[in-house]
Length: 448
Image (cartoon, rainbow, N blue to C red; front, side, top):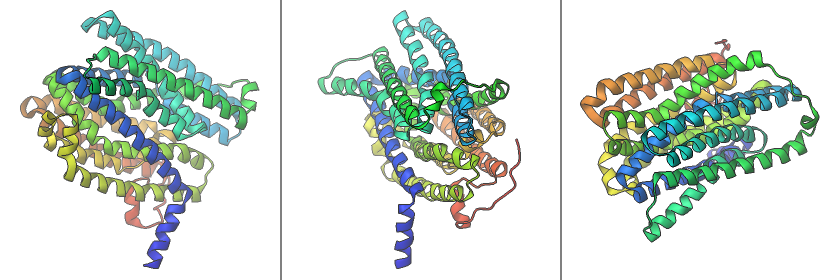
């Protein structure tokens, strides 16, 4: 027993464990922030308007990811790879390149989204939609950069907390004082939060760069466009397909059924994505630590990091399934009693989300180590299974068919991404590491 407690104490005192705990705290606050937004929106806007908000939020989030052109992932790789090699000029060039591509993508994405919204609504809603996409693109880029250079709190914390703060505060007042609101008003408040979050990230980035990398300001940026553009393209497609796995379902349910069903599906997917949120917390830490350790060839540091992540991921997955099984009905009731009827849909979705969460940082590891092509093919297959299944099954089985199709596609993706990340990098980065003891099965990495 003493040995068990000693092992637990040693595990808790690891720097990797402390780092993951910080990431979990940031993510827990982020989950609460998003949960508050969607819960309050559902109650203040009503079923039909909330369904419209869910459709817009899903479509605009996908558009923002597409407009970012993969820069939110590429900048992490460029920064860590070149700083580790002492190539500050190239690292600066990567930042400039990412900003230019993000600016172009934000402009195009804003124009397209504004045009689509104007077709269905009015110019005020169209303007809000365009600004939402533009702000989201820059927030994606600066969040990734701030995570790598400053901290997870400044990177992901600002993106998840500050970005939704104003909307949450106003919606709380609306609920308490029985004020009415609209989809456009909520979107405008989110845009305001995103702009403030970006400003804070830029402030902290500048301060940390001046302290830790002062030479970067005088350095002449060097570019490797011939390498960055192909990588951007692969990461772009992978990001689009990955975002499709998060948001396309709601859009398709709205198209194949109705906005009310889309709103209900949005609620259940948000809750099921609690597993994804837990995985994201671990991935935030992994994306800050793994690239640096990988490119510095720090074998010992990598093994400690991966074993810590595997233990915590396994605990989170098992605990999450238990919570959903026991309290799923009550979680749905928070959004409104009308959503409690979808408990069985929530359970089905949670099985798929849990499978993906158990893969740990397998997906970002593939993208951050130059194997984004393999990840692209896996996500493409998953999206194909999902879309084909929706059109074949949802008309017959409704929202249950949608949940089942989603879970099948997620399980298939989980298996494939786990195997490919291991063969590509030589490391088992999933929760299954704990089944093989502390020592990993080291393999020869293969190029994609």
